[in-house]
Length: 226
Image (cartoon, rainbow, N blue to C red; front, side, top):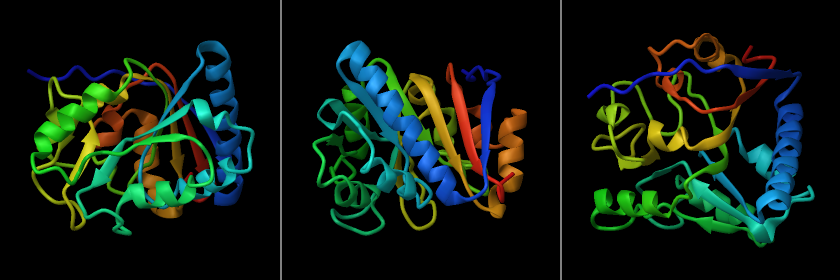
C-alpha cells in the first residue's frame, strides 16, 4: 500500500548567521514549552541528531524552560555502544545534565532492534508537542535517507534500517510518527544545504524530507542555506 503524500506549507524565517538562528530557535522552543505546560502540564519535545541543533540546545540552557515538565524524545539514533561520541544520546545527556528534563533514549543496544523500535513507538505520546528536524544535503531528514526501504514503512512509527548510512545502522521515526507533531521546527544551516532546502520548500517529494507531513511547520535557515 502506498503512503499518501500531503502538501505542507512551511513558514520560513531566515537569519544572518547560524548563531542568530540558534538563539531564535531556543527562544521559540522555550516559549512553546511554557505555553504547553501552562495548557496541559507537560511538554513533549522530540529532537534529531547532528551538529546543527547543538547551538540551540546550549542556548536553551540559558532560557526559562519548565524542565521538570519536559520530556525529550529522540527522533533518530545511531546503533553504536553507550557513550559513543557518534551517538546522539551522548550529546543530549552531556548537554542537559544540569537540568531536570526527562530524556527517553532510543534502545539501540537491545538484541532485537525491531522489537526495540516497536517498544519505543509505544512509549511515544499520541501527539508530540514539538519535533525538531534537520536537513541533509542529500535531502534526508531524521534518518529517513534516500533509497532506504523504511521510507515506505506503512504502519510503523519507529523502525530500524537494515542497511548502514554513513557507517551506522539507524533507528528512526517514520513519516507516521512525524505526522503526530503539533509543530515541526526545521533548523537548516550552511551553503551545502541550499539545493535540499529549495526542494523542501517547494514540496519536492523526490527527497525524503519533502514527504514529511505535519499540521504546522516552521523552517529556520541561515542566509547561507537560502
